[in-house]
Amino acid sequence: MIKQTYLSLNTKERRELINITDKASAFIKEIGGSGLLNIYIPHTTAGILINEDEEGLKRDLLGLFEKLVPESGKYYHNIIDNNADAHQLSVILKNSVCLPFSDGRLLLGTWQSIFFVELDGPRNRQLVMTALF
Image 1 (cartoon, rainbow, N blue to C red):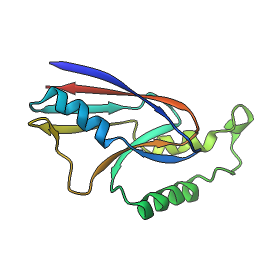
Image 2: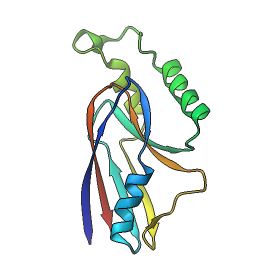
Image 3: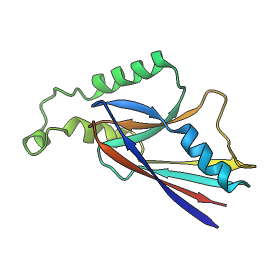
Image 4: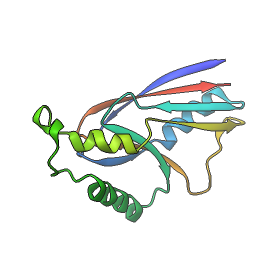
């Protein structure tokens, strides 16, 4: 079977990490059983990642993004829209993750959390969560 839901987010910063683990876990708890959860980000200036939810690490990741693709860089795309850095970072990040679940629980590691990564906010965003079970 397949069950799908949409998750709306209102981001507040130009670049930010938003922990969506609780929302994904609640969706899987409703389903129960075992299967796979796909979380898809249908945006070209955002991404998704799995890592530890620790404030210092999150700041470090945002700093890494700035080092890799500076917001103030000179980019051809900025002639059209001033968000070339966000597009480039989204290429480095993933636009989806697929996670196993069992007995209605995501099989994440001890320190793993799921993050929506805003790269061009603030914006209203939507994620697609699809469970196969």
